[in-house]
Length: 402
Image 1: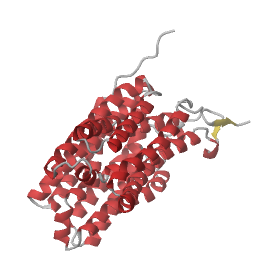
Image 2: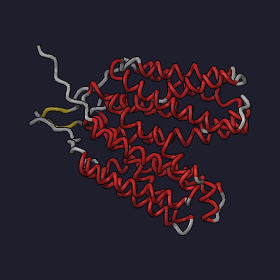
Image 3: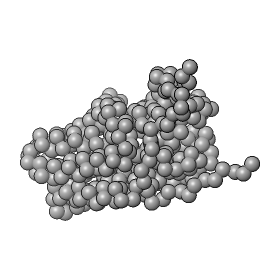
Image 4: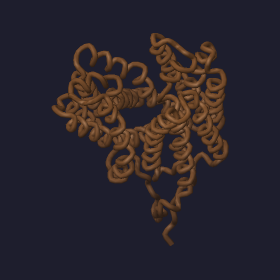
């Protein structure tokens, strides 16, 4: 029997999605770099501007699942174009916002678009590539988010500092508008709705045998993202306090981490398709080893540098691997909902981790951060190991009409 033909890897549409994820993440975190400028320009405290990041994440958590359900029958390409246009409007409104309240409204609008955006592009990627190329495809599209932390946010911050924070948001709006035209022209249409054979009706979603797999995956993401952000949110105070790095070295250390994370994403994309069951546990074990090392030997600066490199190298591809696992495990008819709830899990972990990290610092001090991270990470790794041998995809969930 002849081997099945694998279609060519769709680089152009995937790189288009990569560019959109780059501007989406840059837009999400741009206020963190421009916080003092925005506070001065609006006449409010820096903490109130910082709250805009929390407000954005909270909007993602609240709106993603309902918006995904409401738009489940809309063409994926048309929906993506619409979401990008909302991004344009949100950033343009932020650029001209006369008051803090108007700016908060712009961030809420952007947060609603952001959650739906991630619920769309993951399944879109899965429909563009062969199943055997899924990890690579997700890694390519997710690289935009990684590049945003390395290049997009620093560039936007530099622009805002040099000229005006409003101009930074206006530039983002213009770039997204140009990308919207590229998406409309180059991205192929995909059929995301499951086509039933004659005489078949779908079973209720609660009977879909891939639902438990998706639930466990979302719980796993919630655990490891909470642990990750308990520590990473406060990594600068930890680096200053425990190993005693000078402030002048922090930007270089963070840039080193960003580059290592990008390399880790490419490694995960390469090995994720070849060894789909082993790559994720190995990467998570790498994170665990590095965090334990940082907790035990945090006072030794060379060890800390090595630990930071291993940590971000191992973690860099884990979000993409979890996206690939969910997209390959969910049955076609719940794939969009699965991606939506995965997006919610990521954002709850980001916000919850930052909150818990602050509580840990107040109660036990900065040195306790890696150990709380370890506790949550061990639990998440246990979830992954238990589910590693679950079927990669649940059977087709339909019933014949008698």
